[in-house]
Image 1 (cartoon, rainbow, N blue to C red):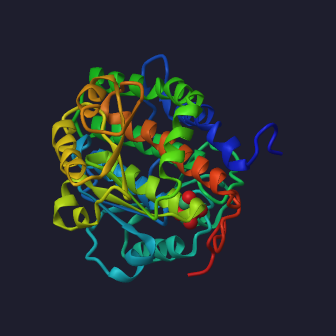
Image 2: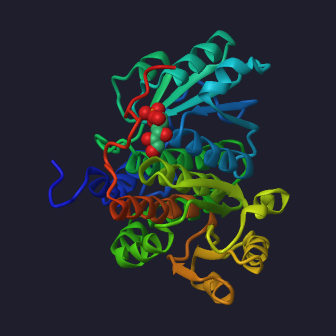
Image 3: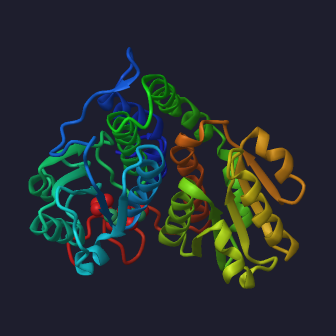
Length: 364
Ligand code: F6R
């Protein structure tokens, strides 16, 4: 049941800290702070190339993981939506592998992409939340998320559980490939293990996110901007907002603004930025300043250090805990999903059963 929550989505949002913690405990040994060697059909040390595939939010997990696998593990990685990958007929590298992300494990296009890559000689791994699912059966190895049943059609806790698995793999692959040492592994796993506590603090700050929801309630279009590994999370924020509040939203790489979307900006188009302090802060902040100069209403999610600069031109700044940039995508997922939820509640939409959508898309 929903317990004391109004919707399953609200209940499942509040399960983020537990689910991230439970999933991390499957992959990280807290004593040694090392990622336990996952059961895989390939050797990450010599893997020439990795394909990632998913649909909707699961695709965005793949996109985030691509940043991690490339920059941390130095592993050539490709990622596409399953409905395209299955028709792309890409040249496949001998000895390559593919990973398929899915909550249900039943998504038709992802299953079809799996069969294509199997026929191309790739070894297959599924990252699923349902152990008995079709995708688990089709793959050479299955990595489980420990999210528990997800009832709300809009995915929440399964998404952060998937990110948690991918982050552990990125660390493990980076070690295997000699890209990081044991001290760096311990530092990164420590940052991951602190995420549940930070997530709980964000979930407590309901009033602040509800205020942002009230800000954007009447908008027809909303832009979500970010750079780097947070760019897919900007797209996740936009996807969730479209899905349950029926407001048109797009996630954009902040640096792409000036190549078109900036033409849309006026005081009626809220610009939501994921912009924590770190190596990409200055560049992102300057993109936001350009939007503000054109009358855009900037709503920024950042940390204490970022807030100082952003308050000069943003109409609202939400301060999140300061974390290592590696774990920032997991943490920033929570406020953007909460935001979509509170907008939907204010609009009175059918939050758990949005129109035209099904929990598991078993048709192509
Ligand atoms: C987004 C959402 C969908 C699913 C997508 C994939 O909130 O729920 O975009 O993420 O349909 O579903 P799975 O993960 O079951 O393959």
